[in-house]
Amino acid sequence: LGVFEQDVSSEICLQFPALYQQGKKNLFFDWYRILGWMANGVYSSLVIFFLNIGVIYEQAFRASGQTADMDAVGTTMFTCIIWAVNVQIALTMSHFTWIQHVLIWGSIGLWYLFLALYGMMPPSLSGNIYRILVEILAPAPIYWVATFLVTVTTVLPYFAHISFQRCLHPLDHHIIQEIKYYKRDVEDRRMWTRERGKAREKTKIGFTARVDAKIRHLRSKLNKKQSNMSQSSTQDTMSPRSL
Image 1 (cartoon, rainbow, N blue to C red):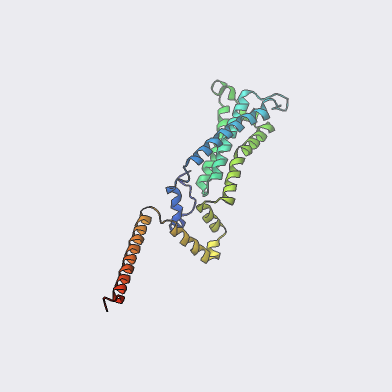
Image 2: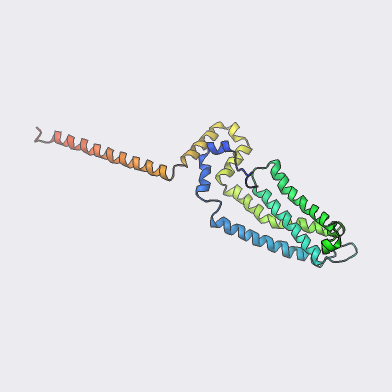
């Protein structure tokens, strides 16, 4: 999925060279993001485990009043993992094609297909998973309620984080995405040209900046030297000895 991800098009990247500075500044792989993803993983695992236990384990799982066994609880947890991971991937991505849709939603569908096909095997092969989807999980409304509730609770902090970042602390590519989405580049060409100019100015760092600074320093020294020479020549002209 990362191969097909694209924050903005390649044409926009050429028009806004400052976007490449995000990679040079290591904005996407700094310790803040690494620790944030680790904390998100710990939070997700705790929510998926304890919320499923609280919702399913001691509740009537079937219409006859039977409670869920460990196989049903474990399968429900894994279902929540599949949903939470793929929904979070969908929230992370900025560019969708049919390939992304097939891989994200298709992987969720393959999980249910695997449960159905594996449960249809003889008990000697499927063991305790024999017909678990058709006869145990699918007819139980609490299975679907738990899947929805746990998935939403798991991805809600990440959704709040990206919403907060886009609204209050957007990155450069977020701003460009908003401009393209609302077609401001077509409606306000002057603004679009101005933003492109700012983007080019931001790229003057590193070797180019050092060369420019050296040239400005040499020019400044040369101008000072010429100014001193002109002043000294003027003083010599105005002195009594010259008269």
